[in-house]
Image: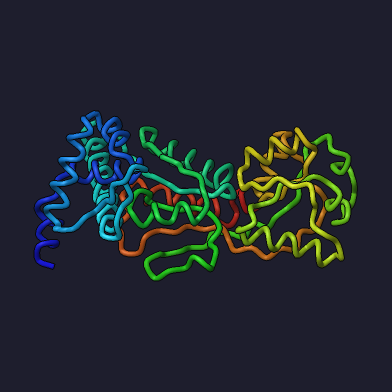
Length: 316
């Protein structure tokens, strides 16, 4: 234990950490070497040096490439966390030195990106034009690990209760129910009332099978004594939804704020179909105990302003 503590505190250098992360990312000595602009023997020598420090094998070598051992996976997580902290501190100091306002990294679901986050970033930029906001889209399964490693400062999206954890702090901002949408020229777009039977006979873009929303939408069809549509594309991507609305005349399901925003731009038409699906609120997730940078705190304030009572978002 003392040896491992000494290695983690004193012996590992940034170049060691960068090499471990690259090797985990590419799972191949040659590709990691190319990414780091060093030779493959140099990567092999550095890995052997690190493994000698720990007294443990960190990666298994084979003809197929390299795979982290359980100990290696733990060290890689440590390396990612340290490098994320290093990059955040470097950016903050550089921003202070240059007179810029810093940088923040946000993980966002589609439900939050085009309206809530876009308006909040606009407010942030109006107050601090040199601030940089990195936005990474995805779902909770992809973004929460990055938040825990420090690669993201904040998550904005639906607060799925299944992902609640003692190491995370959540704050609900508003409810955002689902609506059904089509392209504006679709035959269903002009109807005063649309039935679930009308949807069942159409091509549809539905969430992937593992998404909780997929199950809830399928239950709506069963509740109306219908089978879910057979002609489907599975995607949570907004770009995919828009593409298939036009290319195939499909029906898709979006958060109401997102759908109404793009309906105002003439990109979609919201159907007059009650979608009685209970969904968790849209909100924020941060890592418990981690101090927010001033830039992240400013962005959180802007998000709360946009989502707050009386703002345009609540009226959509």
